[in-house]
Image (cartoon, one colour):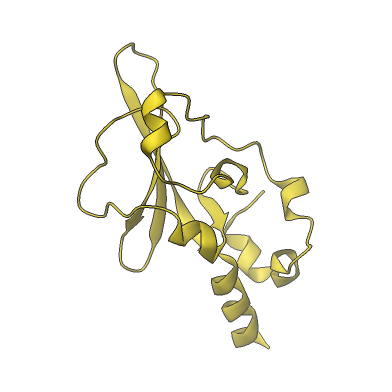
Amino acid sequence: MITASLMSQPGRWLPGAALAATAPTNDIPPMTDPLGLHWRQPADIRSAPMDDEFVRLTSRQVAGLLEYSSSYPSGTYDGKCWLRDGGAVQWLCWYGPHDEPGKISIEYRAVLTEEAALHELGRRI
């Protein structure tokens, strides 16, 4: 499970670590709406390891997300992802299913990058 305690376990952040094997199933639904053909987001975003608070993204995945820090993207359909910059924290956001017909949820996780984890590791050594 990815939690803030991972920062105190730097070995789990190194390339080749078994993080994916311990991560829970990703919560981002597939983007099946035909409008999704026109939306740009990393093809592997659904496989990013996450828990109920954090998601671990590579710098390539972060760069591949469109940023919406003061608004929401139009065209609301399941699986559509974007980046929200909150200053000290970046957020991966996505539209997900809702229990009530005609509604959609907005899900989010704080972004942890491998680069930030390696920086933290260097600071502790």
